[in-house]
Picture 1 (cartoon, rainbow, N blue to C red):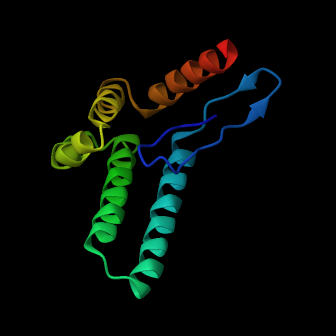
Picture 2 (cartoon, rainbow, N blue to C red; picture 1 turned 60 degrees about the vertical axis):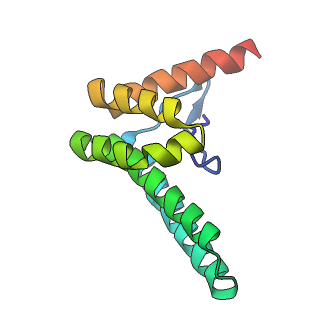
Length: 131
């Protein structure tokens, strides 16, 4: 299962079974988000050692913050997630990700992360079957 997290770099894979793809757990998604935050931080520090560029620094800061938003959503920290979304709105708007992230915020806030993951898995499975 591909689970798009606004970075464009990340996939979270579910368990494959005879019946097709299944949902991943919230815990596994959170671990994957933290792993990607670590990868991005390490990558930035390796680049920053050789090249000091404010655009690169801003990009990696935004990547970290966007992953932090998803982490807050999946951890059930609704108020913090809403605050993070508001603070990231200019970046998300600029990257044309505002609608996707707003919908994820709505789903995770009102239905919970587990329901969002199940819905997203079904949606992806239907899309994969039709192509």
